Structures are given as structure tokens and as C-alpha cells.
Image (cartoon, rainbow, N blue to C red; front, side, top):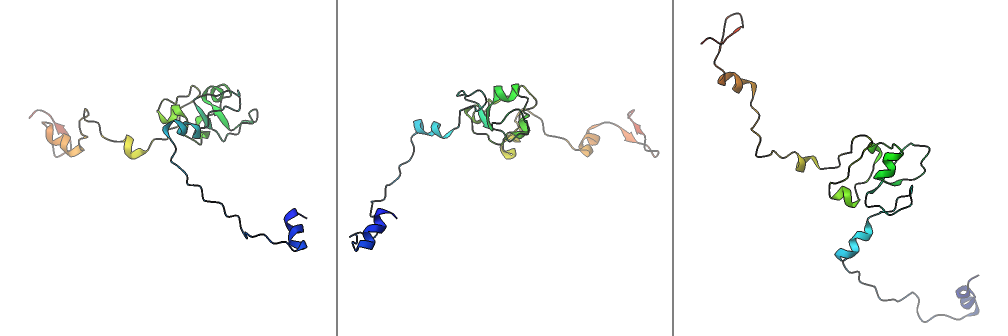
Length: 145
């Protein structure tokens, strides 16, 4: 039995029925506080690293999920098991793996923009129109026009 229940049983009642605290207004986080949202502790080497990501892997020798890129390379954990893209290196597109290919988290719509230095792709019919040849009745191309 709690003290509150004992007091109520004795006949004493509080003047307040509920906790009447003022609501605390939250403020926006400053730029220097936002870095604290990123997880940067490697559970394998137990060091603070800038490239820690969450891996859901099936390696029985490693019991950790939050692993830096160096430990993931040493333990040969493939990058396809990486679930997050939250580290400073990943956000800055500097995250690289030595063991196997690096998983691509980029948005396809933003990365597949046509670059201005490439020529547009020509269709098959356009290539035939530009070439100087004629097609015989047999279907053979004659370039001696």
C-alpha cells in the first residue's frame, strides 16, 4: 500500500485531484545539438567512429548490430545487411566498404538525371536514316550508294 492510498483511507483528501504542472514548451534543436542524434559508438571495437551503421547480419561470431565500417570489413559482413544510412560519412556520400560492394541508398529520381555532357540516345530508326545504305529485296544492306 502506498502512502497516498493510506492517506486516502484515513480520510485525508488532497486539494489537487491531478498533477497540475505547467506544460513545458519544447524548443527547436540547434545545429550543434543535432549531431547528438547520430549513433556513433561501435559495439565491436567499443570506440566512437564517424561511420557506424546498423547491420542485421547472420554472422555468429559477432553479436553486435551497430558496427563501424572498419569492423564490418574485418568481420566480413556484407553491406547488403546494412539497414541504416545515418552516419556522417553516409550522409556526406563518403561511406565506402572494402569488403564487397557498397549498398546504394540514394534516391533513383535524383541520381538518374541526364548529364549535360552526354549526347541523347538515338533510336534504331534514326541511326538507319543517318547511314548511307539501301536495303535490297533479299534484306541485305548495300552501302555502295
